[in-house]
Length: 371
Ligand SMILES: Cc1cc2nc3c(=O)[nH]c(=O)nc-3n(C[C@H](O)[C@H](O)[C@H](O)COP(=O)(O)OP(=O)(O)OC[C@H]3O[C@@H](n4cnc5c(N)ncnc54)[C@H](O)[C@@H]3O)c2cc1C
Image 1 (tube, rainbow, N blue to C red):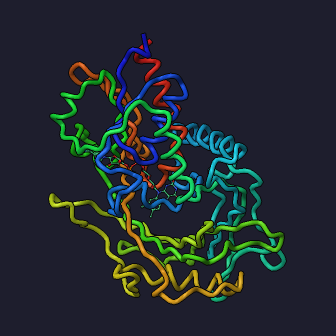
Image 2 (cartoon, protein in one colour):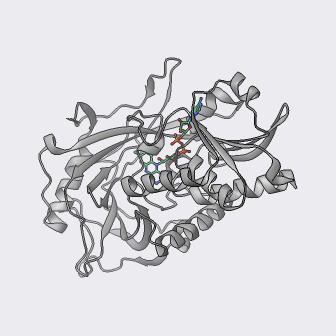
Image 3 (cartoon, protein in one colour):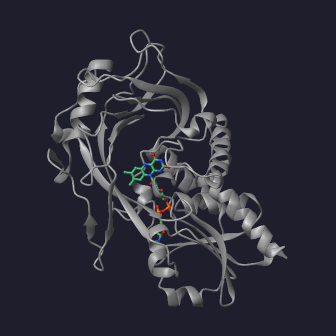
C-alpha cells in the first residue's frame, strides 16, 4: 500500500517544505533531511530560499508544462490568501519600459491585466529621466518572505513525521532507510545525482530597506513594480538588458535586481559575469549602482519616498539555479537501485512561483509510480 512506503524529502527550502506539506496533506507520512536548517541558517548564496523577493509572477515561465504548474501554484496561493496564511499578499504590480515592448504571453494568466495606453493621465511609477512608453499592470500574489517562509516552516514541521539536519553524499543516499526519495536539493543535486544537462546560475543582488513603509497608488493599494530603462542605461556584462524591481514588505522595501550569468568552480567560487561600472558597495557587498540609482529616482518622483542612507540598508546576493533544457526544471521519476527518486529541482528564478504546482505534480508522480 502507498502509505506503507517510507518517504523522505531531501531539502528544506521552499520546494522541499511545500512538497512535504502537500504530501502530508495528501495522506503520506514524510521525513525531511536537509543540510541547512531553514530556521537558523546563516545567509549563503547557494541556499536560494533565503533570498526570494518573492513575487508569484511567471516572468521566466515559458512552456506549457510550466504554465500548468503556475496555474496550480497560483490557485493554491489564492486559497492560502483567502485563509489568511501569513505573508500571502496581493499587490497591484506594474511593469514598465522606457522603450517599446510587446505584451508578454503570461498576460492571460494574470488577474485584472491592463495595458497602458495613456501614460499622461494614468498613475504609474515612473522615472523622471527615462519615462515609460510601454507597460501594463495586474494583480499578483506576493509572499512577504520573512512572514511567509517562517509560517511555511512552522506549518510543515507540525505535519511531518521527522526532521533531520545532515549533509548527504551520494553514498548516504544509497544507504537511506527510505523506499522513496523526493529530491528538492536544488543546486545540491549537482553533487548528489547524475544529470548531464548544462547547469546555469543567475546571481541576483537585493537591497533591504528596513522600516520604509509600503508604497501605494492613489487608491491606497499596495504597489510593486519592475522597470526597464533600456540597455543603454542598465545591461549585464554580456550586454543583456536588465530591469530593476521594488516590492513592499511589512518590514520595509526590497529592491532588486540583477541577473548575472555564471557557474561555480570546483571550490564553489563564482565564475561568471561581474557587476559593471558604475558599482556601489552596501554592507561590504559590491552591486550594480543602477539598482539604487534607478529606484531612488522612481521612488522619489512617484511616491515622494526618500531612501535612507546606505549605512541603514542591508544587501544580499543569492543564486538562482537552473538547467538548460525543458525550461530548466527537472520534475520526473527515476529508479536508482532499490529506490524510487522523484526529482524537483532547477527552478531558476521561479522556485516560489512554482512551489505549490511542483508539490502537486510530485504527489501525482508518486501516485502514478506506486499505484
Ligand atoms: C535574488 C533572488 C530573487 C528571487 N526572487 C524570486 C521571486 O521573486 N519569485 C520566485 O518564485 N523565485 C525567486 N527566486 C528564486 C527562488 O529563491 C528559488 O527558486 C527557490 O528558493 C528554490 O528553492 P528550493 O527549495 O528549490 O532550493 P533551496 O532553497 O536552495 O533549498 C535546497 C535545500 O537542499 C538542501 N541540500 C542541498 N544539498 C544537500 C545535501 N547534500 N544534503 C542534504 N541537503 C542538501 C539545502 O540545505 C536546502 O535545504 C529568487 C532568487 C534570488 C537569488
